[in-house]
Image (tube, rainbow, N blue to C red; front, side, top):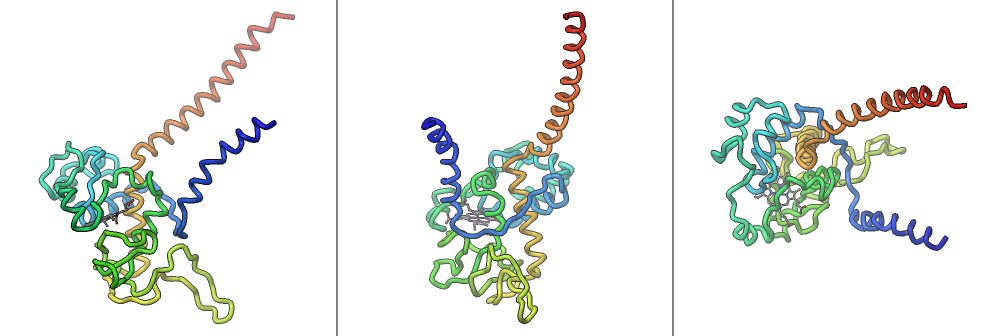
Length: 251
Ligand code: HEC
């Protein structure tokens, strides 16, 4: 019995670790790797706004182009800016040591970021920047306190003057009928070119793309899984029939 209790405790241990990691409330997002349009928009945003600093160095351009359904020539023309060949790994030329001294810490590679932090975290982080004059770059992040990354999407989102309400579900105020937390930000210091809903959508696509990056074979795996299950069902049936046939004459 004691062994059983210790065993159960050991099984539950990792969940304690998980619980410790989630200190800030997050908005959730459900990735969909079959939504190619979303992945394509995410890849475009990543190439335009993120790849100056972050590499995806465990992936190759060609594989990504094939997976998200962009013809290789189109991908090469529009989404590769550093003259790399499509067969190459998605590296960047930024010097990590120098970047470290510019930003406080170097921008990490993001190929496996969705595995490390999870999609909810990335989706919330990208929407979590706000104005904070006490920081060297004038911005902070509700999900990643004292972040070294600049708010690179400020043109699109604008700059929130207060802490955005990440992780607070919108609800209807019973007295006034107004919707609370309809928008993550209640006061803007700078207007962006997108509305909040458009920006959320763009960040959904970008997170979806990073989610695909962390698990590029998910769609294929699920498809194969279906076949494996169908095979097991048919095989069980055959094995059962065979078993019945063998034992038919044994009394
Ligand atoms: C100007 C350079 C720069 C650009 C452009 C940039 N980042 Fe960053 N990013 C950083 C730096 C520096 C850090 C490390 C921050 C720290 O550790 O304080 C970082 C950290 C991150 C992290 C958190 C990594 C972790 O787990 O610690 C994510 C996620 C991220 N960036 C995503 C993006 C995305 C998506 C884009 C494009 C929209 C982007 N970044 C554009 C510099 C940049």
